[in-house]
Image 1 (cartoon, one colour):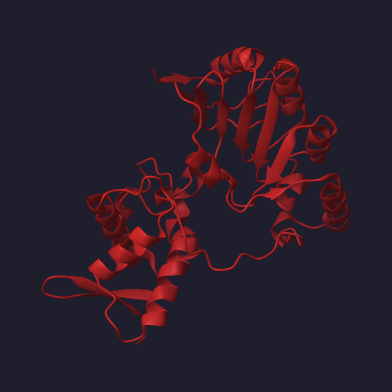
Image 2 (cartoon, rainbow, N blue to C red):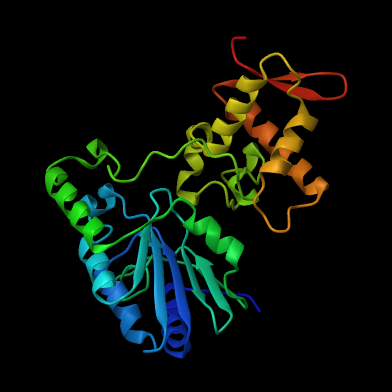
Length: 295
């Protein structure tokens, strides 16, 4: 059964689930505050392990939306923690209880109504734990934090605390990723461009709906398509060709049916037509194809 919880209601059900879980609590959160992880840890059963993945960007620490002391607390208390610099998800999963909560609540005191004035959050409940495939999506590209890495983070933060947030660079220890060539279906646009401001989307975070064009042009999926078209040069780059490329690149298990892949491809063509700064679409009698702009 699915149910939506307010901020305070979610705090209460989270406390109950944490006390009952005997195996593992898995949390994905953009922001992480010391008071919230202390609270969740204190609510959890002694036999239960906790794993976290959070965005933890330098900007978040400088602005105060995340605490470096929260990372230290995790390491001091055997809580496994990783950082992923593009993470926006908020997920709380309880393995032995077969329950999962997905919504807008970060692991912060305001996000969980642990302060007198809290955020207005909404969180949905699902009677299933997060499956392995979904967990892999959240952990893709994440960097495990060790005590040595924490020392590096603190040293880098000490060097930049005087800077304005928009002057901050990403962590130097996070290697630049090579071109991504495999994707989960949730990494592709999932609503038409005209509906991005009024529809929920797994591809586009809610706080970035007004920036859909720049978000798409900087996405790994867009870069991948540009690379494919560049490599093909003067050969065919039509709808059927891209559908086959998407089908071969999907990490979903099981892979969607051909009709589902065609839907993904159709929406991708719509987003390219609406927002791409590098690709253009040519309409033919029975199909359409892609080409680089100014070619």
